[in-house]
Amino acid sequence: MERVKVKSYATVANLVCGFDILGMALNEPYDLMEVQLLNEPKVVLHNKDQFGLPEDPENNVAGVVLLSVLESMKHKIGFDVEIQKQIKPGSGLGSSAASAAGAAVAANLLLGNIFSKEDLVRFAMNGEKLASGVKHADNITPCIYGGVSLIRSIFPLDIVSIPAPDLFVTVVHPQIEVKTSDARQILRKQILLKDAIRQWGNIAGLVTGFLKKDFDLISRSLEDVIIEPVRSILIPGFDEVKRKCKEAGVLGGGISGSGPSVFMLSRDRLAASEAENVMKDVYTRIGIGYNTYVTTINQKGVEMVKDGQ
Ligand code: HSE
Image (cartoon, rainbow, N blue to C red; front, side):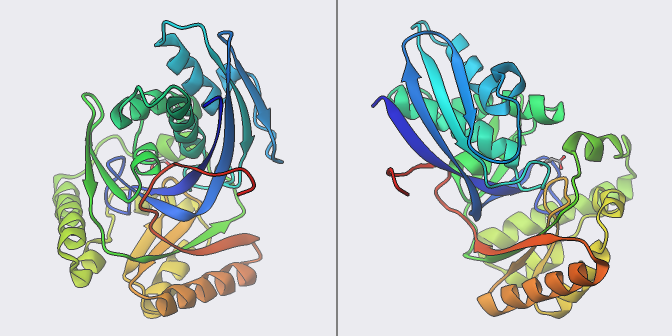
């Protein structure tokens, strides 16, 4: 195979209480990437979207990932990449992770699957380091594995896939940009033990709720007493959206990754659609442009697509 096209999906990092350790893949939105093998050691990038991201490989998320793949290889090969992003950078929906994970998976397909999924997460983390200054894996991992992922540890890498029930996910992306690096900068470096205890209870409760399909437990555990109180001030309308979506019947939700997108989980499509109406009403009234998605959990991770798809 000399050329491959992949779909790389949006992801929701943190899943409210699991800062940097939990993430989930979505079926929408997604990026498309087409990667071709070259017979000289270089990476050539072409952006086919309106986001104006750098095409210099050392300053591009997909570029640094592919350069790290090349560094690990003996053979003198290279990659030519066309990227058609649909996940807006700075949305909190894992845009950089989709580029990083898509590039790593596409390269591996072209190389005959010589790398494990864990290897691909390691390569893709170089892209996150470029994008946010930190090697976090809570977007990349679900993007590559699909479903819900627990990243118990990054060094050494310890990934656990969590079987989650089929849930609907409603997302609103208010059209303001929050840089992950800025949203990390404002966080407190120290937390109170009582807050840590509450957060541990929620993380354990959320994972157990997913495993046991205990929707009340999932709902109770979608609470973040550490990060959300700080970051939510960056997102106009956040408290109102959350409160009204709960009243509309969602299980719960919060900030998607570092924001500004906000997501809600629901058991049925009706509650998910009600949540979308709430989100639209709030941002129309506030006067901030927005995109919404009503989607489901993606179970496959980055996947190959046929031409024309
Ligand atoms: N866990 C990261 C953060 C995800 O919240 O900063 C960024 O998408």
